[in-house]
Image 1: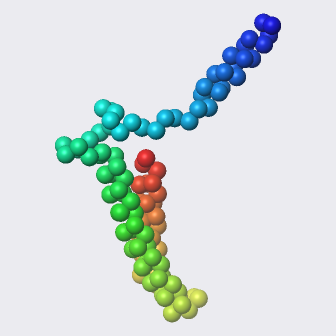
Image 2: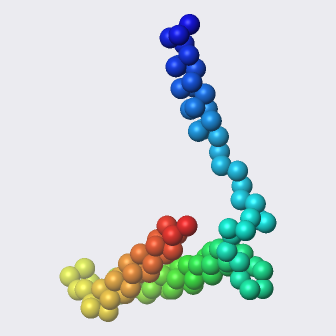
Image 3: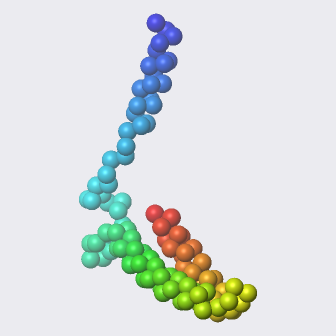
Length: 103
């Protein structure tokens, strides 16, 4: 019987740790709020989402321009403008990825 006690304790601790965290309480005093009472984290997330949507739209336009440049040019020609557009697309991608990993 003494052999089973540690096993049961391990299983009990594992089950207790496996419980999903409780959703945050909106009345929790640790939640940062603006002076007018709105949740600051929600406002930041909403602004980040809107900025990411704008960046995605800009990426789409740049991709359309790169596609037109690639179709227009020969396979041996590569314009400097196309390379700059591709660099800008890469910067936008990193910016969006950084925003998404923040929270």
